[in-house]
Amino acid sequence: MGGQVDPARRAAVALLNGVLGEGRMLSDLLAQPAGPLAALEPGQRARAQRLALAVLRHLEPADRLLATHLRKAPPVEVMNVLRLAVVEMLVDAVPPHGAVNAAVALLRAGKRTTHQAGLANAVLRKAAEAGGDWAKLPPQRMPLWLRKPLVGLWGCEVVSAIEAVEAAGAPLDLTLRDPSQGSLWAERLEAEVLPTGSLRRRVVGQVSELPGYAEGAWWVQDAAAALPVRLLDPRPGERVLDLCAAPGGKTLQLAAAGAAVTAVDLSGPRMERLRANLARCGLAAEVVVADALHWTAEPFDAVLLDAPCSASGTIRRHPDLPFVKDGSEVAGLVALQAQLIDRALGLLKPGGRLVVCTCSLLPEEGEGQLAAALARHPGLAVEDLAVPGVPEGWRAAGGGLRLRPDHWADRGGVDGFFMARLRRAG
Ligand SMILES: C[S@@+](CC[C@H](N)C(=O)[O-])C[C@H]1O[C@@H](n2cnc3c(N)ncnc32)[C@H](O)[C@@H]1O
Image (cartoon, rainbow, N blue to C red; front, top):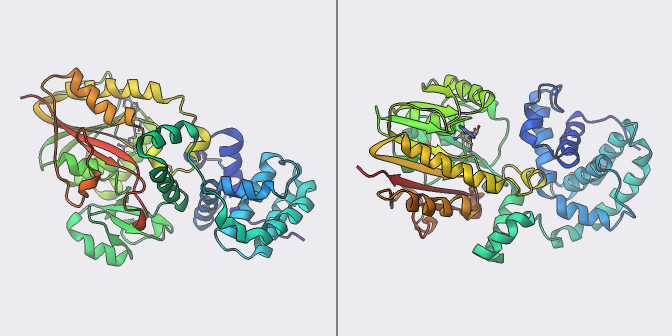
């Protein structure tokens, strides 16, 4: 029983321990130089990450199944090994003997877990036999602080559809530096061209190994996240401010359109990533690390504000978020977003256009912010514009676009976003 420890599985469990045991975001754990993935080669890193994400997307059904075979829940690090084996067997269709032996080996190798190896073996074999019941278990739900207002807004059916898309995970979306080369790159990357111009690959794979990565022909950006710049519609030579810019997906789009871009963000490390992204893609922008609330400059032709938010629209790509956030940050973020909108308007020429967006599902970070900004600023107008490829049904009643993860569900969904284009009085 047991055998060699698989380094990718061990790292996946370490990531799960960080998220579920210590309440840390996966992005922080992955960015740590001495983090759980540090010693792994790129292929193993990608696999470890994929395994941890799969467990987080199916944690609730996995726990329900395990609970029927456990008299009491073991410590979190043991539980995470069991969860991984259940998800591998029942979601990834890994043969039970392989998943169970790997779990037993992992537990045997840990001083604090070795005595649980026998129990794990028995529990997992029973869970494997009960595999047929897996499909009957309710899928992973959003946390109550998010679920409740969304059920009130859109109803149970829509919320369940969103949760189904979140559990299925996200495909890989790419934005092209030269949007006219869609079919060429779609063929090279074995990707589909979405109606809005983004490329979508069903198989995520190892991004840095894909054709076109090294030469900067594209960057990773969810199809929904690519729309605010399309709504802004930057023109060559225009002075455009990208406020809250890092890690820079939208800065790259603006620069690729030929705008003279100034990118501002508070976070030095995130701006290093923006610089690296610009360099890889051979694009240029003025990069400023500063607090947008206090930074000042000559007014711009156009401003894009991608304000910090709950990120509740990104759970299909960040399934760790529901386990780390409890909604207590939202009120503070809503207040900051309103301040940033006022600041953005102050940095805009009369008659200039401002796109505001958040990757949130909560109306107080989207529709509510728009209505409040219009009320605070007489003369400010919301522009009702069609973005090529965006279905009519995505338009929000009070102006702007409301994107939900269950939009294009059959294609793999999109991130939840709200975005609107405003025009300052001339
Ligand atoms: C949603 S992210 C931006 C994503 C980015 N626009 C992109 O497309 O890659 C929000 C950003 O706001 C930045 N931020 C938060 N508060 C800020 C402030 N007061 N001034 C400037 N940037 C701020 C954060 O560092 C974070 O990078």
